[in-house]
Length: 319
Image (tube, rainbow, N blue to C red; front, side):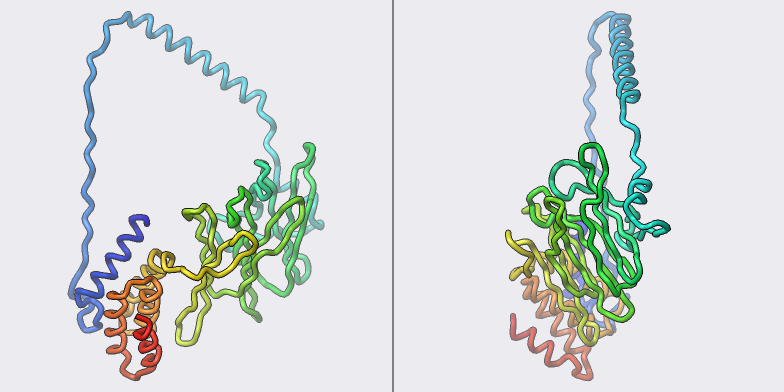
């Protein structure tokens, strides 16, 4: 767990136990964090008795040798590839490449080793008619070739495109998110092997998160789907050796990611009953029973119209 996650969980515990959770007390107390600057120790050394001219000569000789080596590498370096020009050779004329909306640093052209051969393939997406197409271009025998292409129709926007190693075998999967004004967003993952693209994951989403850094070196995908009254169902998916499936135990993800998220949302507006329910549900699924009991109790007090009465009771029955 990283320091940000720890701070988020500690904040929620203080929020629930200090009375900050009740709307009437909001703003009376403030939680402050203080960082203690670290110190560094420096040790002094007595200079050795050597001829300074000899040291200078050796230093100059080393510098000149290093400069010559650097110049040699620069002059012998292969010319930089123009990936935009390469891609244009394999897509229809006057086609505009699509820049994914997310991640925020995404570009029209992406480089990644998809098949584990230690060489990057080019990934590029473009629109053709009512289809969004994605091409994979690979260098073979010093020549670039479009080795695979896949498409999907009836989506307006390329909401997301990135790669993640979901199978822990040194290969990356392409993850694409599509959005449309008339249909639910779709999140899909594709594997690339022996120049063949295969779809390995397809789920609708309202929100999602690609969790790349995990203990077993396999990326996971958390899919959030919105229910009535602003609540969410969250499923965590992982490769099981043959396919991507929903994890039965996602308590670690709830504790490290979901609970802090709902804690922040709740602090913004503790008068919304759905905020209390979402936090309570996350605490139960994270295995944080004491905190869940406290959140449920406060939430039921805020729920004056009993809109979430049955939902809160269902959570209590799980503890």
